[in-house]
Length: 393
Ligand code: RFL
Image (cartoon, rainbow, N blue to C red):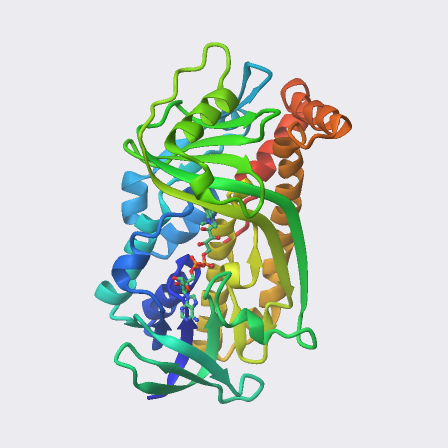
C-alpha cells in the first residue's frame, strides 16, 4: 500500500515527475480528478522553449514532439497599420517549438502508464493530505467507484494546477503568496482554420491587444483583449472576426483565414507566486506553485523546469539518500519563476499600453516597442527573455 511518492495532478508537471521516477524504477502513483480522454484533449499551451524540449529529450520524453512539432524562428508585431518582423533565430541562433499541450500530455501519459508501467488513477475526488510535517504523510482520496482510499507515502508532489487543493495547504504561516492582477481579460479562442501568417503575430491596437498563434495546420489560436470577467457570449462569431481583422490588420498582411470557433473563453490575467514552494513533505510544482498569465507563454515551460528539478531531486533522495536537490528545490525554481514574472509584466505593458486609455502610457510603451527594432542591444535582450534563458541540465 505504501508508495514512496504520490503525485497529485496529471498535467505536464505531474506526469514529467512521474516519468522521471519510473525511469529508475521508483514506485509512485499519480492521482487525477479528470478522465484520461479529457486531459488528452484539454487545449491550452503550445509554445515550448528549446531548453525545455532538450530536458524532455534527455529523459526519453520527446520522440513524438521532435518528429511533429514546428520550429518558430520569428514573430511579428503590428502597430499603426505597419508590420514589424522580429527575427529571433537570426539574432540568437535559437528558436521556439510549437507543440500543442494536449499532444504533450498524451505522450507523457502513454510513456508513464503504458511504457514505464506507472500507476495512475483517474476520476479521483476529495484529495486530502495528512501529516505533511511528519516523516509519514498520508494521502486520502475517494476513488472513481466512491471508495475512500488511503496511501501512506514518503513525499507528495502538488502538481494539481491553479485550481487544485495542494496550494491551499501553504497557509500564510507556512508560505508567502504574492499576487498581481493585470485588470485585463483575454478572450482565448481556438479556430478551426489554418494559420493566417507564417509566424506568431501580436497586434497592438487602440481597441485592445490581439494575438495569432499557429497550433497546427488545421487549428489556430487567437486572443482578443477584453474587459476582465467579460461573458464569452458577448463575442459572436462576426464580432470576433471583425475585431481580429481590425486589430491584426496591416499593410501587406495576408487576410485572416476564418473558421469555426471551437474554444471561446475569457481568461482574467493574474499571476501569483508561492514562496517557498515546499511545506514539510509536500513539494509544489507548476501552476500549483506559480501562475503566469499566458501573456508571455511561459507557464508550461516553468512547469517543466520545476518537474525536471523535482524529479531528479526525488530520485537522488530515494535512490542515494542525497537530500541536496530537495533542500535547494524551491530556491532553484524561484529564480526562473520571478524572471518570467517580470518579463510577463513588461510584455503586458507593450501589449496593453496602447489600449489603456492613458496616452502617456501609450506613448512610452510604443517607444519601448520601437526600441526593439532600432537598437540591436534592446533586440537581443528581448530575444533572450522571449526565448527563455538556457539553464544547464
Ligand atoms: P495543469 O496542466 O493545470 O495540470 C494540473 C492537473 O491536476 C488536475 N487536478 C487534480 N488532480 C487531483 N486532485 C485534485 N484536487 C486536482 N485538481 C486539479 C487537473 O485536472 C490537471 O490535469 O498544471 P501543470 O502541470 O502545472 O502545467 C501548467 C500548464 O498547464 C500551464 O502553465 C500552461 O497551460 C499555461 N499556458 C501556456 N504556457 C506555455 O508555456 N506556453 C503557452 O503557449 C501557454 N498558453 C496557457 C496557454 C494557459 C492557458 N489557459 C487555459 C490558462 C494558453 C491558455 C489559454
